[in-house]
Image (cartoon, rainbow, N blue to C red; front, side):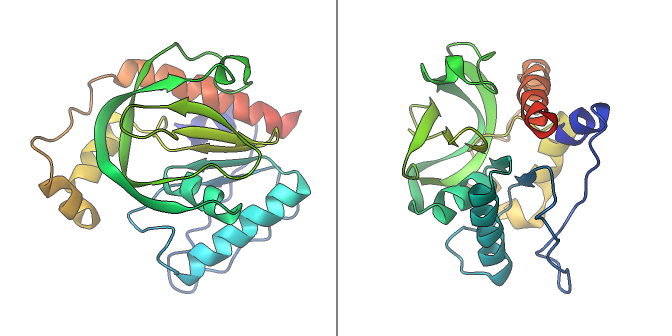
Length: 213
């Protein structure tokens, strides 16, 4: 749900699948902003393309470019900015509540969230907050669910961007089989999909506004 929101605002998107062999790292110095998405790997795996992504994150932060990290992307952002990424005490796969902080109610991206929102998760690791970061959301299972560094760098541990079709596809992917086997039952892709779509347009629309401000 991120791409349609950006395209509605006339923002062109260039994809860079750095995990694919032979993919050249993109030139990002002139980009209006950078988005780092999720994946089944760990930020601690030491993979060359993850190291390059973290270098891009550091450069973008220093240059004042808007940055959005989602799930693994949030963990990479935290690690790139000096924080620790590690195994969470319990995995979160499915629909779980997050609770915006007081700071979130004044934040340009998250101020439209209620006191508690049921959103989709798929992660087994978590992170400490980077230095000078502002905590924007927490949950009972995972204290650090969203953060902001400065006014332009955001990390979201949860997935606002998913659709029911994406959730169903993730449950079928070979890379996720280990995670799926640990579940008592598969998550219902439609459980809170309507509200999630509203939040997706709200939050990603506000982030897109940073690009054109």
